[in-house]
Length: 610
Image (tube, rainbow, N blue to C red; front, side, top):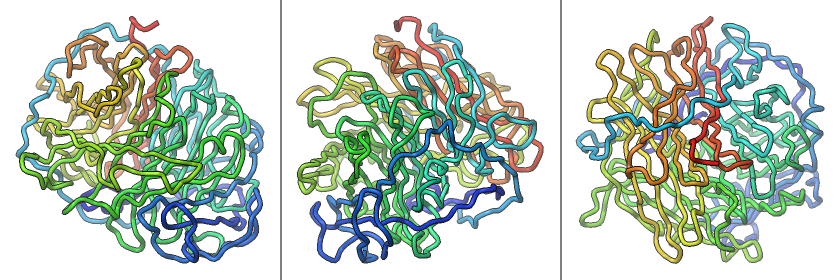
């Protein structure tokens, strides 16, 4: 939400509308003990500043040195705050819009190599029988323009639209609220500030409602996870650390109670753009590192949270690697994603989770003969909760595998300038975020011998539009990953109505059918929500199914920076492992000069999946 990934990564402006809420947010943060070094607490080397009082699980305050951790594995004890009241019992707080407030911005940075030729562009739309929307209803919205049912208390741009489907419910999150729906669109819990879950605690997660939310459904345990970062500590005692707030539901009911955790990471480094994936032995996360007070990024941090403890409401640890200490020559490892398990088939016991990123020569310059610089890099993250010192990430920080990909041009659009997306009627073009993989990176075990990982990111086409590069990586048992197929979805449109497609999310059903959701916009079209896909067995590298339009907005983004995204989310219904659920933003009729974002939740499926 706050920052823009650029090489080197430069922090990004956010537009905020100050909201007045009748809530007193106060309290002190409880003690957190942490360690540095080879997975054990090194004497005198801890995370953060002096902490007061005790954790909900017991323990005492410790003096923490304000220094960078080692590469890792670093072990940090989270603060467990007990169990929240049921969500359906939390007060419904009014949303009162306030004046526009702008955080200072930085300068434009260049995009990727414009000389690259993309040989895998798909020029023709598919015609396969992918279903029209099955469910199609509004989610949380910015409370300007015509009245909206579920207003966000953030009053900010962009929404950072997130959501996931569970056994019987759908949970959506935006900056800085979440809401719970039935699978027919009935509102089971109105839009609620995420930090209301921590309202009865006395930590930073109560004080801050900073956004960059993540919602995942742990289908193995039938539990929900909702998180947001701590991005704006004041530096005062009890409010002095960056971190992550994580709530894990006590049952499969998202409107029930949650186990509450706060993981503090110190005052030296802000961990931005966190993304979380479910794995049998942990909840895995990546975040981009911004050492303070520098404006430039350092690289990426990777985390494994102690899932088994969090599911049972016990004090939990996180194992952390500071990957920025192993950046490649002339570049940074950054903008990667963790694997997020789909389906009910488990990887082999003890299997590490995968992390991955896709680079071009402008981000990670090639150093080996024959390397063009267009590469998919993958790391194995193995966590050992019995002896965390045995945890590993990659080959001592280097990727476990590097796989060449077809060349592409990485678009970069900052504040509406650069390789941006046009829109009908707007004073500014729209952000692309072509500098990172788009959430999620689903992992699925296809059979007893092969697993599949999907990835996507935005690229510039030879015609100057923006399309979506996508990949399927196959991982044979006891063998190295390889790219099974890749393509750039950028079909030709009519000359009078060309479309740019971007901000994608990709997933796969139990049959191996792949779906892709995204935004689409053009100089003669308002931004719309669309999806397509390919059935298992169809020609490789092609989205063979018809392009469906789930919803078309009724106005442009009028905010002067053209903010859009910063992500969307396509997930698969665990009830049948067939139905896809997609959430994405669109724009309503504007009443003020900031752009009235709305969100939509849509479901669909392949006819052959039953």
